[in-house]
Amino acid sequence: MMMKWWQNAVVYQIYPRSFQDSNGDGIGDIQGIISRLDYLQELGIDAVWLSPVYASPNDDNGYDISNYQAIHPDYGTMADMDELIEKARDRNIRIVMDLVVNHTSDEHQWFIEAKKGKDSPYRDYYIWRDPVAGGVPNNLTSAFSGSAWTLDENSGQYYLHLFSSKQPDLNWENEQVRREVYDMMNFWLDKGIGGFRMDVIDLIGKVPDKEITADGPKLHDYIQEMHQETLKGRDVMTVGETWSATPETARLYSHPDREELSMIFQFEHILLEEEPDKSKWDIKDLDLVEWKKVLTKWQVELTADGWNSLFWNNHDTPRVVSRWGNDTTYRKESAKLFAILLHHMRGTPYIFQGEEIGMTNRVIQSVDEVDDIESRNMYYERLEKGYSEEELLHLINVRGRDNARTPIQWDDSKHAGFTEETPWLPVQPNHVEVNVKQALEDKESVFYTYQKLIRLRKENPILVRGDFKLLLPAHPTVFAYERQFEGERWLVCGNISSEPQEISLSESGEADVMIVSNYSRAAVDLKAIQLKPYEAFSIKLK
Ligand code: GLC
Ligand code: CA
Image (cartoon, rainbow, N blue to C red; front, side, top):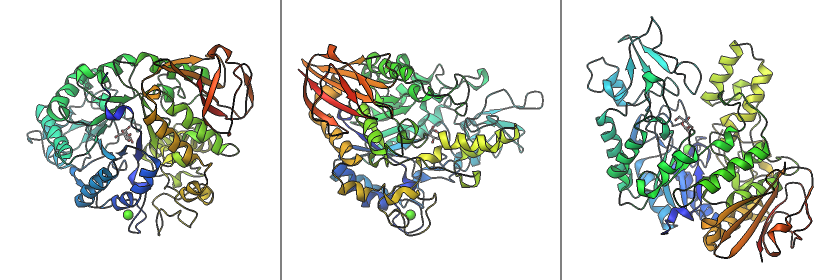
């Protein structure tokens, strides 16, 4: 099998608003990113997935784009963007742009034109329906609470928005819309970017009248057409954000012969924290045995005929160390444990900015502290339904998107070296201990575990290509697995708990050299392993 560069790559996600401010307005920007490229190079990553930097009224922090070929002045200029692409390339880092084409902003010129009336040439760029019985056309709801339909007073018709009312959905059935999107993609590809991360791409084939949103009948036709018109013949990577994915649909997206995408983000392991068929805010405790089963399913069912992406967190989720680890007593240990468990699996790993130093969730006491539209809308909707304020703040602290969006903690100074002035979202108090400067000075820091893991993937084809076998499937806290490739075998093991555990992995044979350990463990007797709280290691087997 011919390997692609993105198969042994590690991708680093930058949420630009919170990465590095360069001009003292409290908002991260492109020059800020450029100033930190050496840091990223030292970490060893191959590509940056850059969350949106396009022109936007920021109703959803840039996921509501008003001009796909312009940079938001908060972030800089197109010249800054070109400079970033070039300076990153000098360091062998590719810039993967966020492609948000399920919807635009309502301030995009297309929508402004479309709203002018039923005979506007842009009308059909969006999805309009007449009222039904004097109300909304059907029961489709927005991911950000309430109906997915908003009335346009002027024409008396409703338009569809699966996210906020300032994010009208594009009508992908309209060939002209598709043409515009492909032209825009080619504009960026011609600049030499490394590819695209495709926002909620599983929704573009929607059939609103049948209340079908994800996985519509024409979804894969559109993606194949997009591939032919834009990606074909270019050495780029693409990753689709697909909350609905199953291993079966993942093969449709990522089988190389089908010429669609390089890989997708699947969310099954994240969705285990929700009551089935309810919302993201109807939470339940994570069952680790189920979680291991889901991760294993994706490892074994997507092999030569598809490709996995691997991640624990992103700008839409809480931080892993706070959510599934322990961000107080065992912050470093558990941050390293999740790094070790992820980076030994098959697929392309993604690191969310700050994860590599073990940054933690933000804790809020009042809704006034919340910026994120999703959390705010949920809060007010549920408050009206009678939920208590306390309950709702708890939900936001557990699952809200601002958790992971606080500024990067570069050092222990007043605003953590992120900005000179007041940051758009407050810097977390623990920046005095948890920061990049400290991490770089301490050879035992979380940072160096990530650096080592990234290097390991480049040097060991077993990590990229080896088979995966789950061990101890029923163990309630230990995630252990073997990788195997051309006669070589590695064992990976982690105790996701603050209690010590004793296990036996004697069926794996005999231990050889230790590869990575978060407790400086030198050796292990597979017949009786005493695991400390959040201990993880990987070892070669004889
Ligand atoms: C994706 C993005 C999220 C955004 C939504 C709507 O899920 O990751 O941040 O709010 O799409 O664009
Ligand atoms: Ca700035």
